[in-house]
Length: 215
Ligand SMILES: [Mn+2]
Image 1 (spheres, rainbow, N blue to C red):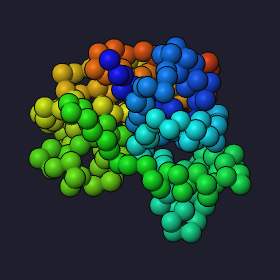
Image 2: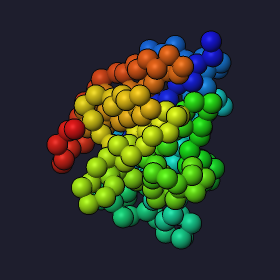
Image 3: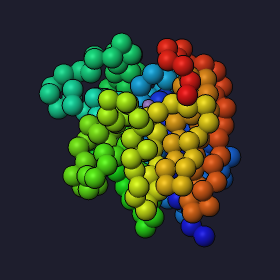
């Protein structure tokens, strides 16, 4: 059966992504999807983008880091909002514009017959098409009690997302969280559909110290 393979946040971790692609024995027949945040924080955003752009069977969702870069670029500025942005821009070098053009064509979500992939989350009682790009790319919690958005998600389709770093993938009936913090020395995880099997590789090193505690 044809596989759909969904990758968690890569954040420039090119070594780990290549290792995971090898481990999965990925072929041209597989449909590949990244949940977003290919770039920023990690060792090589440009190498990750080069590889992503070379894979015709890959779709990348816009992550909050891509969205920030895109909004800065469209405003005619070089991204410098986060402390690590300058390093990423420097590393992208002359290909910055090429990368931004490619990123500008990335969707905010993709869906299949029984799954939806977004970077961060969905607001309850709002149709997929009506979700804002900020919610799709950054949503974590809802309400004064700051409960995770997926506590309020009762849809039939399984929502696959990244963004929220955890030690282990979050697996619920209709929600799967795949950001296992590779850039923080955790793991890079991928979900295979329709089997729902999760495959991961360990980060070669801690590329960035994590300020918050692990969930
Ligand atoms: Mn991320």
